[in-house]
Amino acid sequence: MEHAALSAPIQMESEEVLSQIILVVSVVSMVGSGWIIISFLVSLGISEFLAASNVVISAGLNTSGIEIWNPSLKTFCGFNGLMAQTFLVQTDYWILSIAICTYLILMDYIHAASWVQNHKAALWCIPWGLSILWAVLGLVVVGYGYAGGWCWFTSDRVRLFVNFIPRWTIILVILCIYTRLCVFLYRSHKALSSDQEVTLQMPHPHQWQLLDIGDGPSHTSHSSIPLKKVSHLSIGVSGIKPMTE
Image (tube, rainbow, N blue to C red; front, side, top):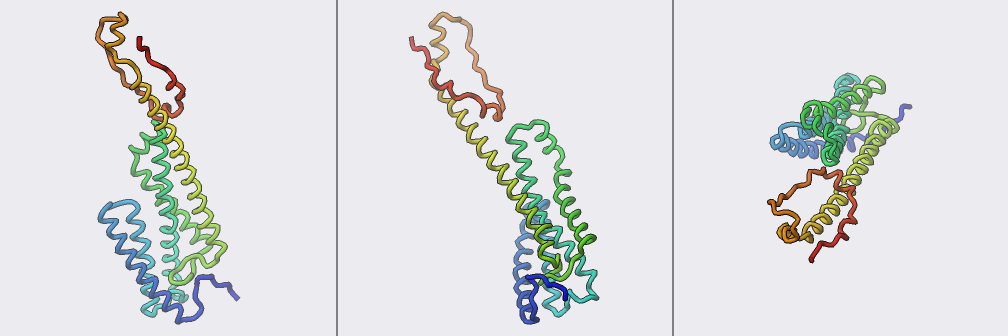
């Protein structure tokens, strides 16, 4: 006897209720995603909209009495599972890409940050390419079947290794990236605040002229040290006391 997925209901009454609930939730999600597309036009909103549309189609067919798990609809079920797997993990790739780009720019990796800003199309293709690649591999290697409301992986073990473990890995990577950025920004702010205090304590340039150091015009200079280097400066300079006599 073939093992059924845990989320797939056994009784037809439960299946109808599940399909109706999924249909309502998916329609609401589809409307919200459509608004995102109108607002941002491209990127993450499109994937959210297509993901909701895919679920709306499968749940709508189930609600109308068309059983998508029927062997005659095997091709549709495979396509439905392919679409579901494509957009299920794509959001994670988008968020990871945003975190990496933010890290490169704020940490002052000049060449990498410049490449990111000049190759937006390539960055746009990375989440789409990875998600489509994994979805196609899932279709070819394992295959998709009815999983309750829509078609997806029918084995809970496959779901665990293909989706949830990579997803939690991405979450941990994102947490490490933003933790590193938080520490970096805190140290940079502390160093800049200390430097500003020392600057305020320094005597006015006119006072240096009274010491006959020079009669030429005074020049002010602005530091061109990147923020990344500022965070590593020693804060011990705050102990320097200005000359008052």
